Length: 420
Image: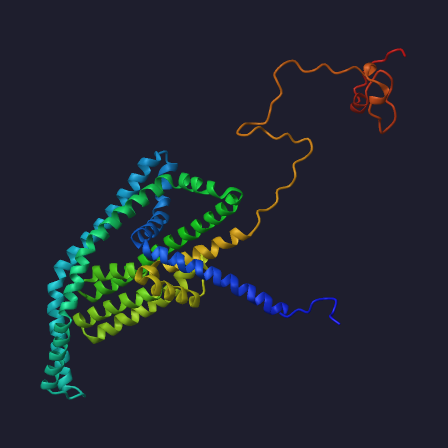
């Protein structure tokens, strides 16, 4: 005899797990092909991503200019000119300081190399001059064998200069139009979602707010970090302190990884120019300042916008670096933060509005509520003309004939009397 009900061959838990696995596989396939498309369009995707970051950074200035009464086109041009002036001024300062101090750096590095060579011979290692010369020759051979690869890299970099220039032009155009017509572009974008437009609008605004807080907070933290390290390097008399401060500033945009790279470069320059003691002092100051930045500045300025655990940041940086190198590591954290804030807004239903009252009259679209037409007020109907069934009952009894209850309640004492 077969049972009346069919036997369940798959337990419910296993069925749910299989459904989740299928969904995850489909999402992974979509993400993989999306990543392939982005990688194929890196020439366009990377400038657009940087333009979004620049727009989030520069939009407060444009918005203030608009509120001051300046037309959007002029406010956008003023913002772009100010940004380009800051970049050009910073580049000129760094280039001037580098060309002035580079010869001094070479002399100091040569002096430090001689001191290190003397210490290797007379110090506890007791190396011989022949061994040191052999090590130097081996290093020279390694550099010589890599000369062709280095030359090829230089040639490829020169060939890619045109692509970089085109990307910069595209970046400037995208930033300009986002600053000028960002609201209209967003409204045009929402038209394609139909009933989903309110959810997409909420998600987009939450993502934009998160991105703005992240970019502005990161710029503030990076500026403080670069300024402090620049003052320390200048106080120690380290050559190229201005380029190193700028390097630390830009490296701060890549969390955790960037500061290690910039700090290592600055420490090596300090070691070559000022010796081991000052290099260790600079390294200690860098570590202390980095800890203060991570535990004070980052939570106060950036942490409120992201609320990411350091482990999540490390994993996101690793994935971004593997997929897209340095550029991927730079944009991985803001992209993850934007997705983290936008997805809940896509899932949640909008709050239900209370129903309007029965006597509420909806105003016409784009207009004001209807107003009564001007003219003389309607004449009240005398009580004698009102049918008995239409007269409202009085709670405290029938008022005296020929008067109203309100007149007696006000105590006017001037009630009119009429014969029945």
